[in-house]
Length: 119
Length: 481
Image (spheres, rainbow over the protein chains, first blue to last red):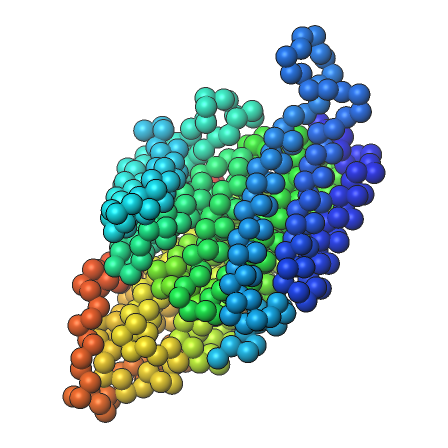
């Protein structure tokens, strides 16, 4: 059992703040690129949350050393590599869509998404 | 045979890689055929698992031979098999349908989508499920883009909502890991009731995160906005896949996580029942006022997903049978409806329902199959939609929930109104029939075979419901042993 949720740490609070800032950006911002930024901040919040699950002060990863008894959990870090890669994919895809949308509508306003000004 | 699960997932992924290389060479035009080969092989492998799965066996495979709590496990049981069967059939038909119209990278994306779908239903590891879900979502976002410029904004809208959904899911997975220290579903099934006793609020938070995320992904009432946009603006074969398969992923994950895994004392039945009811009512009412043919079909999908949820929310074995059977039937029916709508739009160039009136140039077969699909989804015997709606209705009556049963019947009539409006326009007397008969032969026969397969399926599973119920028996046995 990992005690991540039992004692809340500073990193958890930062992660939650980042998550909420990202959520706010994604929901409330009118500019499409700012929405993508919001999505990125939201994902970073989750990544930070996972990373802090695997962190214990004073403990280390058992790489190429013998006799270490107190080891940190290496799994969350490994998993977060995957999440970061997925986040990069999503960002790249969103930005490339936005470039093509901008070429067509000459605007980055969120109203485009609801179909105003179409046809 | 035990390594079939990984082959079913990995083959399309490998072929997707080769196809994206092949699309750069001069052999560009064979990409589709290669994709067809790989989907065909995967689908046949899925079918080969059939006899053993339906006999009640479960086929497990440990990746890299690491045992359960450490490594990632794939497991095919009744529920995964049913979903994998639907996905295989729809992807195969979509690839056949798009052989002539699309080329190159499109097919590698469809294969990645297929691999992701199978991965989601086979995996027993929560984080792995998230990764496969993201894989399938990203390829779906890209595939929504069609030559129509408005599809760009549909794709971006889908991307924002879909990424938010998977992010919420990932946060839930993180909290579960913090509580239980494992991602393995079997281990979690043992751990969650223990944690529930000490930290019920944390489990409730995870449940809420998962529900919101699945609600977005399967297009339920408040979070449905991407469904009509993406479904109506995507290319026809992708509309079929989105409606028949991608929406069902959300329902699958819901059943898998909440009904076979996290069995806590809190009962979600009421919530799911009313959520499904609201979605059904809302989707049905909005479908009535749509002018665009494919958009109407998209709202009808919201309606039908609501109906599936109602069956699950009734919480009885009969309701679950009806739901899973309707999930299967809806994939067949919506597939044939979207295919015929695509053909109608292709041959007339018109999307608005009103403009379809008196068009002699629509070939007979798409019109006929649209009629059959409409009858099936309304629930007219002897087509398959009737059987599953009957089962859900009967389950509602047996639970004493007469209002729910009445609403299901009323919204069957509402569905009849909006579908038959289209059918009436399609079959109305063609004024210019003699003068404009030119385009009726422009649809290649291979597209008709896709449509014919799905229609034949609806008829067979309507006439022989015991065959269909045999398919879902193992899936129901997982939830109500």
